Image (tube, rainbow, N blue to C red; front, top):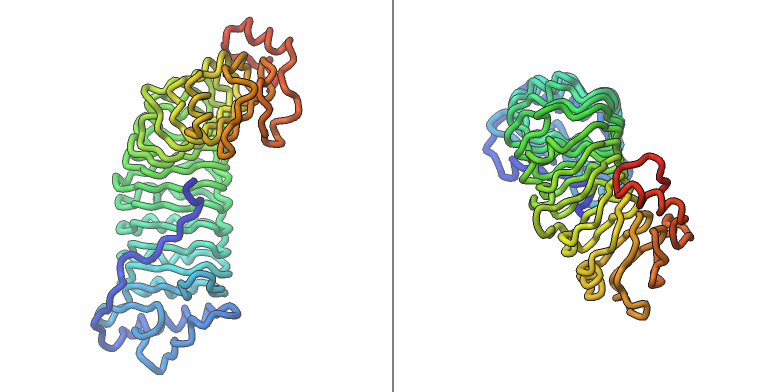
Length: 404
């Protein structure tokens, strides 16, 4: 699985600039920024910030001529304890600033509204701190902004629509905050990464709110609703998709399984309908568990290495090709528990590879082999016969009367 957090390193200014005497406005701004911050115990980032010397030689300060163009606050080494304090509004006076980052630490307070004055800002990354308050809508004035990373903070309020309207965004990472309201439309044709997971976002996705340029999309752990099939059919460049733990409804388009995905996470929603890939699925991990999918399991899923179909309403026989792939360790995880499956062709004496996991509990059959199931699968081997009879009578159609 792709890591749930990516810390972007500075992109623009890893070279030396020729500089003269620093502009007095920038000098005073750096002084104010320094007064608002301190090293956490174990950090010595500010040891070089001696204002009796040239500030362009300070750690994390990069100049071009007499202007500060990049400010990377804190020691970027892994495990550094980071900084504490607040971001001073004087940062908005660094008129040539194109990159601003802060390493993980304990910086608190709001993101300064004055940052909207940084018209050249292309990279803004203040993640894994304790920022609070709203995301300033005035950030929508940063027309050159390409990366916005405010992840792992304590931000509240809505995602400003003005941010979605920024024309050059390529990365928006706002995960692990307390953001609420709906997702604004994102118009940038360059947007490749949108990570909004672990917030309190709600409502439906608006038409054309997600650009077709997206390669990474995570909206998991929110309260989003409504169908997404229209949106998904347009996102044919996706290599990672996580919509899990929401309240999305409707069907999943078969074309989704042809996208260059390495990970498909749709679990714990209210999706329904049959799952009908258009061709052989080569996505390594597919998790569509805890939904309301029904119909027979497609044999086109046999090349998936980790396949989670549990807690749905699938029926019929388990395709023989899935069993073959499992026994040759081609499938490492095959979770089929809590469905309405009626049979599986497998020799009761067969040994399942140690590297593979199969769970068949709570279906309309007695599992022919004893396999290790997750604890949450329960101890009951099969469904009560009345449930299976009722489901068979409905011929796989949706029902709200079936438990599990």
